[in-house]
Length: 332
Image (cartoon, rainbow, N blue to C red; front, side, top):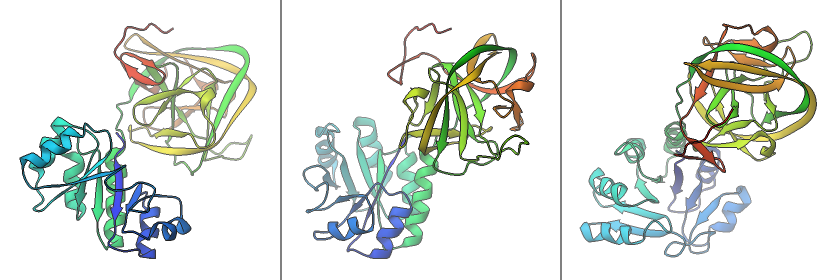
């Protein structure tokens, strides 16, 4: 689940603002008169009297001193983010609020408080606001937020059943905005509940140079796993979309797409199963297209044989416009 990361500064300090931008902060909370200076350095939401969002209007602030203060936060109903502060920082008020409402941003002073706020009652606050004058703390907390927010998926072994040419169709290549590491790729499948881990193109080949930012995923109709437990169709991916990068151990992180290419190519239907549950994907029929073995190594789809094992990920239920729902849906 994505977590909001705000940084609160007592005054405009160029180095701290730059550090917040580089550390992935979603917003800066600042005094009046700082917004224009911040926007000169980069695009980021400023919460200030003259900012993009204003305290007291688009963002509420509440000092938790007693139970009635908690009730006031709950009465807001999560309609706008509520930034809460505690005179003596303890987790009990936050636990009470997490149990009763949403959209709570907890003020924290350091890495320890940030970790507690993000993991309290397993769910954690919707986000944190780091009040600091330390660039080191901003970097450390930014890294923590990314780590906590990233999903950990349980990949399983799927047994290959068959590969079958299906003629020419529209294939989607996803070019990400970063260099992918060995073992990383995208989860895609013909259905919304079963996906293969498609390996990225950082493998040396006599036929073409490596493209370590690219994943040659599959046909336009296929589902792709996205951040925040959502899916989308490959045909919908475009520059600026965010996809979910996954490795062989199930570690994930969101990443921006720089380009998606749709081209007509000869295609191959790969079928496998996990405990008799089918997993399949239509992919380009070429030796440079690879899935992932259980040990994290790539295997070309042209080398697949019945009985080979490849990594897959499965879910229960169905999807409605990419959002997971509890419903009986048959896909085949």
